[in-house]
Amino acid sequence: MPPLAPAPITVALGDGIGPEIMEASLRILEAGGARLAPEFVEIGEAVWREGHSSGLAPGVWDSLRRTGVFYKAPVTTPQGGGVKSLNVTIRKTLGLYANVRPCVAYAPFVATRHPGMDLVIVRENEEDLYAGIEHRQTADVVQCLKLITRPGCERIARYAFEFARSQNRRKITCLTKDNIMKATDGLFRRVFEEVGADYPEIAQEHMIIDIGAARIADTPEAFDVVLAPNLYGDIVSDIAAQVAGSVGLAPSANIGERCAMFEAVHGSAPDLAGRDLANPSGLLLSGVLMLSHLDQGEAAARVRNAWLRTLEDGVRTADMGAGESASAPVGAKAFTQAVIDRLGETPRRLKPARVQSAPRVAAGNQTPAAAPQKETVGVDLFVEWRGDVGRLVSQLKALEHGPLELKMVTNRGVKVWPDGLPETFCVDHWRCRFMNGGAPISLREIADLSARAAEAGVEFIKMENLCTFDGEPGFSLGQGQ
Ligand code: NAD
Image 1 (cartoon, protein in one colour):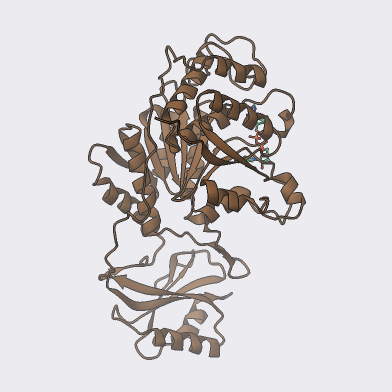
Image 2: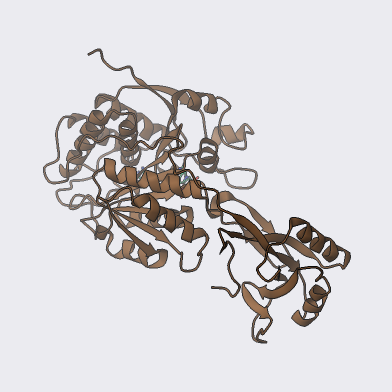
């Protein structure tokens, strides 16, 4: 068979230690048999300085469109305003919906309290509180919208199960706070269970995020694959990397339907730049994930095994805690050469890497949703008001007309009318619920209510329609639950 053509990839050298660790990683990957055709692009400090607020040179998107794979070294984020997060821009623009972070202990060769730890965090990467939709609504109140979508949940759950299947992993733990956020986190959990029905061979469990995070910190060896929405996933992936004892060794993959990005978890470590001290392992292991993604599983396994063998032989850079058999730390160049010298060898005690294919989650393979029967049954009018709830209620009662009746007023989710308690602390932000006794109302009636509110000088900020879906309320029922 003729040799396969090299895979085009987009490579950014980044800032600080970025160029050194990228050069080292590419050397090892290519010596390990990776077939790569890198296109180098500019990102980071210099590009920000030239006035590109994203930190990405203009040619980056064209290159990524051609290659579909981004191998990225860390960048130094400039301090001060006017600078957008480069990673958030890349993730959102390219639709990189899955953030995958393996957190593995390399005991006894890298010191850790959890020698049996070998887990992978699969974090939803685009939705949740990271949609960046925030508003200041009143003098005292700001809000951030938490958006969770069914297609977003289906895609990440499907990815997590396909990942577990392709890597022979046996269990997925889903983390949410669905006891409090019944609609948003509740959907994430429900979809996890629905998609999970297609993967009976994989054990499935759910934990509330607080106890789940505590257990990851305490007994990480009990976890295999962990699936979480964006914010919780962000937090637990740092906990897990820290507990593994090896933040500097941790790789990550950001996966989308058309593009994927591979980078180390750590930053650009400007303090180490140019001193032959930077450990290339995090970026190298991200490159190993990239090779699996490119269907170059043999090269991926060869490089990982040589790297494991290097650890076993006690060769380490200064940042790696000295474990069993460690000798004095070596410089980054010597470490790189030590890995290259061991290509073709396998570890004796650490678990050797096997040739694995990357999960394939095809575009548009989600369950087509049957459109539910939707009815609008009321509206929450959010009002700015400083003063007594009794006076607010009399103004709101004057707006009642036709089928819409004032049913309840809450402040920060706590019911203050009817039957409120004088002890409840109130701010200038009130949710005023109007309903038609549960029966449908028209959008015209909602528009008329807002027009009457405007005429009466009621300072409303926004309205949220209350809808039922197949008869089930699509809104929380009142009291902060
Ligand atoms: P950092 O990860 O760069 O450094 C934290 C500590 O770990 C430092 O002591 C550093 O010397 C050490 N360290 C990190 N990587 C190492 C390696 N490969 N080998 C040996 N030691 C290593 O975090 P920071 O100091 O908070 O951030 C520095 C810069 O990196 C900031 O501008 C930050 O915004 C940026 N950053 C970028 C990314 C990214 O591009 N993905 C991620 C995180 C931070």
